[in-house]
Length: 207
Image (cartoon, rainbow, N blue to C red):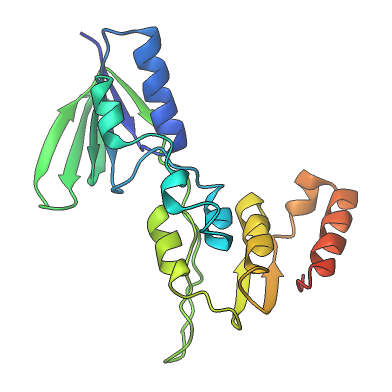
């Protein structure tokens, strides 16, 4: 039996696992995910932060771990892949909970880990607000506890999630400042960026 190893269990990884199971029911599918949750909408996190009553946390998760396991997918959360030997077709895996190491063989492998936010390496004054990413449900949980109606939010990043956070934080904060990468206009277009900036300013955002 062919064994497929998928590293990463958010949108891309679990979509790949479900598609592989549907197309080839006899595949041995193993998904390793270092977070406790799987199959959630990262793009929906800013909207859940901005209006948790309308979009509760649970709605960010498309399918549960148990549902995937019921479909015959060997899904292991809190397991981190530390090394992959492509020649030997073997991965070294560590349990995040126990620290136990194991070796997992595979015939085919898919990397679906996504990206990590780049956090500035700079000294932070004692008592200063924390610098936090928004990539996972755990990140959203931390941010949710820090939002204040009279607070100020500075968001670095002008991609989809960054812009969504801007519109959502208008509901939560009195003052907002946003920074975007200079290269954003190459993807959105100069005219599109001008329209976007004007609308954000109209929503009392500082761009």
